[in-house]
Image (cartoon, rainbow, N blue to C red):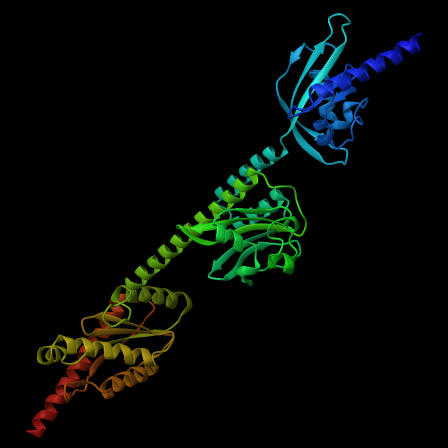
Length: 474
């Protein structure tokens, strides 16, 4: 009698499961009906597909087998699915479920309790939606924010992290950030499971799937190339890449290259979220390339301004400001390391007469001639600057008086002997020189003052010599 009753009860439950399954078959969610022992009475087709079971294979199974973490099963049993639970629909929750093949997915679940008033039998129901892609996309966006806002990472490191994020998010193991110039496709950065791609590698654009991205100027996605309209593309023939997802990288309104991910194996169909994510990744890289380019241009301008602030615009030699800085540095080095150095102060003779008689343009040409000659014979360690007007200062590190005198003599001789014409008239340019030998307790002003005194004495001596020579000839 008892056995017949139980058999009839099982038949009734089976009939109930069939009826419920038919009712919910067209609802866009997995639906499970379970008894008070949490054994499955009914499941619609989507539930079978979502969990990877054949039709009716779930019937009679404990829902325990559907949870990735046994703790979730136990917690939901104590909080929702028990004899004391209130009748009705509870709040939505997300839990990690387990498929038959051992893989897991995130399921947004709405569950509740129904109770037969006549028999007081309790039934539980659950409507489950696979939100794995949604949660993965949200996780990717959070990760992207962390990557892009990090001050610890360089641009290259950020791009590498985005490539890593994309390969994981899209299930495509190859990630490339490329630059495209004409028909040249150049790898800027890449991630490859076998490290087969290196920055600087070049390909013809036409043999890459990125040619479609460039032609469309938009995201292109192929989850199974062999069954797509591009199955005859050279990239498939040469590299056998079955899946591809790529987006254009635009910098300041112009196409720069692509961000793309690929795989030798087919993958699931790409979703709208995948399309928007790869577009977002590429957009950020484009903005960063533009920002980096602007920063580099600004830095180059800053360095050029800094260089110009130290250069005499007429002669191209250093200016007085730069030389003063060099003198302070060399004096400090001498005091700390006992390194000897000397300075030479040079001044054109009769420069005012040159300007008055032949014009200031001729005077400028004389100054430029000195700069050219001095740079031709100077040592790499020497520093030459226009000190003011027609005066020049030469700093000679680790040089004694004898070596400095020899060098300055060669310089003034070369200037005098260099061809310098004004029209048909040949002029010989001469300079007076004063030497200053640095001492341990020197200041820059004191050192230059001694060199200036020596130079004035040299100029006076030259003037006296010329005067005596003129009187003798007369």
